[in-house]
Image 1 (tube, rainbow, N blue to C red):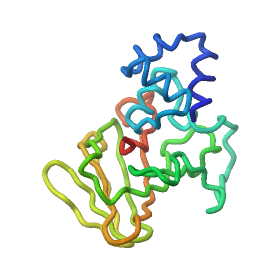
Image 2: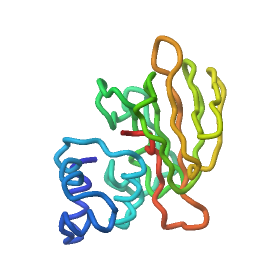
Image 3: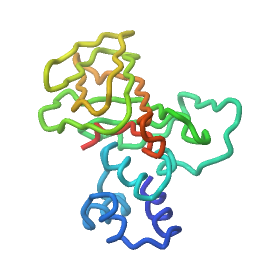
Length: 193
């Protein structure tokens, strides 16, 4: 993703300052993202994608012509965060699919969510617990989800997720763009620090 942000910015003849201003992030933080020194949250990724005028998934892979079926084998999922990431870890799924109305990810939330800020962004999210147990935390309540459970909610609701048990939970995360604004980028990572 790091090289894609820089590449997309340069393709648009946009300065670092201009992209920072359009996306609402600081120039120094954007520079860290482009150099791989910082991993942006999904909310920041969504802001960058909107400022660059591309769907969110364009930050992670070259857009290719949409085919009938895009298959991503388990061993081919692309890590979007480092394995030793103390916060939420993400793996991209179907990154090479063309324009799509949802963005799928594998989500591995941390056990300690105290230092993870609540995130919110346009669109909707669907969480499905593939392995383990997790908690979806919203300001009004905490919802425990076991393997096989799912939750569907407006992503504009401040939220974060944490793993329960000894191992990190594995969740399928689907993010859709806001139906009211088709130009809003698809956002799956509002959980990254």
